[in-house]
Image 1: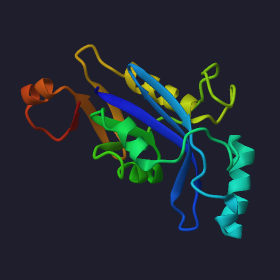
Image 2 (image 1 turned 135 degrees about the vertical axis):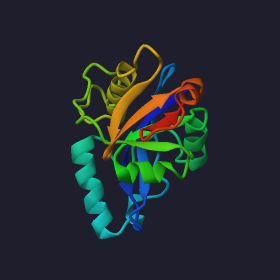
Image 3 (image 1 turned 90 degrees about the vertical axis):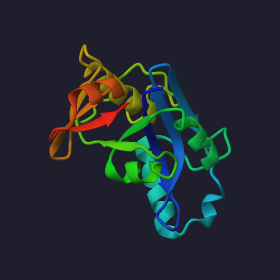
Length: 180
């Protein structure tokens, strides 16, 4: 599979490391949303992280105790690894996801206007990870050119994503190519 968009909502542990609560993986033939059980009781968080967890609950709708699947980082890897490239919005998320996949790209492009009507476990919640992932996947997919490439800004340079054959045909130049 060529690429997927991975988005998530997360709490943080006492070491300021993400604990994913809601994970969304969206590819051409896959739309997956998972809500993980917490790895331990909220009482194990220090006061600062408990306050942060309450704030996240108010803004994203998930409580620390929510979830139906045991939190398992191997499972996250298994969902990501079939894809050649994983895209996500935001530097901190991209850095975190690199622990699960060797080819993670940060989307620095459009501000997200979340899609409404996306099936979300929490109903039509405006800050749902699956809504963000669907929106970003649609953005990347709609940017495809007829010759199988798409372009977007990645920091300060233009990035063109092309097939391996197209990259070989073009040779090298100053443009950056991500092969899919």
